[in-house]
Image (cartoon, rainbow, N blue to C red; front, side, top):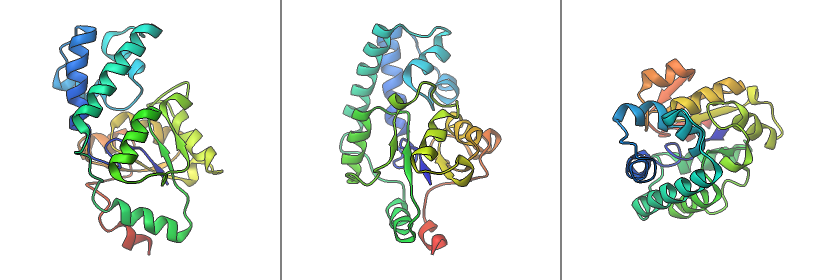
Length: 211
């Protein structure tokens, strides 16, 4: 199993969207519309998202300044408010009990991953991880999920991926994974059109299904 973090382990999209709106205006001079947030922001690393928004890949200094401001703002908004998606802990327990390996495959950096794991009380639960800095091409490119499968010693075609964003679904499906998406960020119709086999609201009942 390959799990995205934001929108899959925790329904935190509102905090990211607010941070994007505030920092894009402050740093890039962009007033992001809801359509921008829906179709250009979700899924991928910050420099690639900036390129989607502006048509130009940011230089290293701008990318670093934006990343620090945006992710810092996100953490200040989300601190103390993150909760796991319903049914997740029971699902992970069931995977452990069946000896089914799982990995984190996220565009987030190490700081945000550590923050999310601490806020959710997961500690070192996701031992195998692919972070944004581990790949040269972020979502929607398939590289993140190909690497996630590789780190589990598996082919991507033998993995089930959980994603919430259209670009994340495209990444996982493009790698050859079967994708069950969560409707925490995008509507079911968009997730299915991007390549998801199924879209569900949360993980309620998944532990029983594994049993």
